[in-house]
Length: 374
Image 1 (cartoon, rainbow, N blue to C red):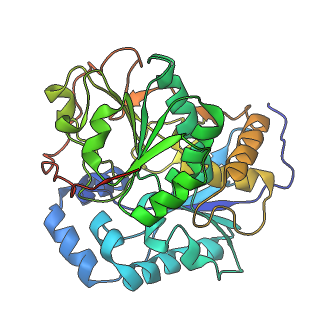
Image 2: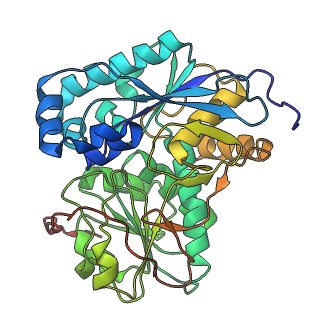
């Protein structure tokens, strides 16, 4: 028996939601739910505010008798979360109520529940439970994933951060500037925020642009944006480029690997947690978790009280969580082995296993051309 560390640990909850294929995700929770057409789900979820059910539990291997956390499913589609405004925030707020009722002292915002609440800032008023968007540890794990890919690229490889001004993107950009020598290309839609971010970096460290087409100059593309019309296509990538896709729902499609066999696409934000026993469907194999879930669990382990990552986290918050993760290494909390579309892959060659059974994806739309910010 591994000795129990972290005596002040407390239970947590983590919010998830159906991804693009609602039927497939709900079928992972209860098989008959997978038989209902996606259109029926989409219509029902738009019209009715269903309660958020508990769909899974989490336990630690060093204390298996105690519940470490609960998975709570927010009954909204990705489109509803991105465009739902106050309605989406109200439904998410009820899910947070459910977490507090269960006894959780920290709740993590999974996938699009974070941007739907302005990175959790819309929940800052909650005093009964701590809230985290999980983006500090996500930025930290994305940094480690990028460094792993950079080991196989030229020393002067250009790194593009798509979604650089977002919650994860801002923190990651600063970490990259601190910990790698590579030139940076910052891509986002808001020119004012881009200018501000670039100004916060050492002079000459980065170029900023609102033009997604500029990423074709990059050797490594880190994809962080949750925008529905920012799908990365073949024409956006240079020959031999590597892509680290840290979006959920993801903004790359499996067909891209057939169109561009020279390109490598690696799933970002995945953490190895062999010491976490999970019951419930999150679209990942046992022993693997999203970094935002891992952050929530680390906060519970450490006994942290109050909010943590709200809005845009700082590099210092990311570094602190890396320290906690090192203390919890008997449970894992390390960068997961590389995967591509959920399948194991090496980082020195393209993904060659059979493609998973994904539904057809709408062809990528071209983002409006922007001017390079000098």
